[in-house]
Length: 223
Image (cartoon, rainbow, N blue to C red):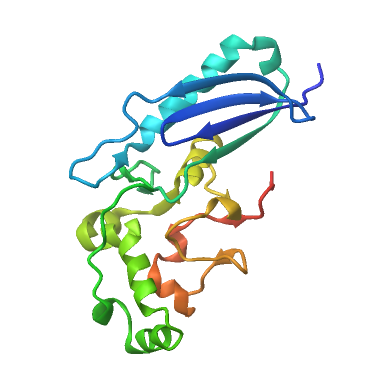
């Protein structure tokens, strides 16, 4: 039997979908599971969810699709995963999550002090181009900065700071490689060069995550 179908997994904020497409892009089978409780809030404005919750939902959804369409399941040639953006997982050296994920809709702000968190040169350059206030606001929105400031012990233990999609790639393939197109959020990504900002580049100061804590980036569409 020729294998020519693609299993597409869509991990959203409120549901997970597993779908089978043929090479013409026709949807042949689909399972959608909505979450009874998409996230939890320990404080007003907080929105968090455990990474293993999403993994269990992915497994449940794909298993249901396999039961629903067993003959089509045997024709799967490739798997693709898409997820919500700007939601990250802190993992240790065993890739075990260290804390719940701070989701994209979370409203907390990192306690940024520009005079301590940016050098005089950085402050001057951002002010010269009229971006100082915007930069500070973006730094406040970065969940990485919030964790660094409020949970330094967690950040110290963090071996990798993975996007939701990077974490799912690891769970599926034991690799944290991820597409450049999936890195949308408060991270030090150079969109023009499609790579992480280097340690001496100005914009890196907004989200100063060590390169070795981040995913290895690959071009979109890479197998």
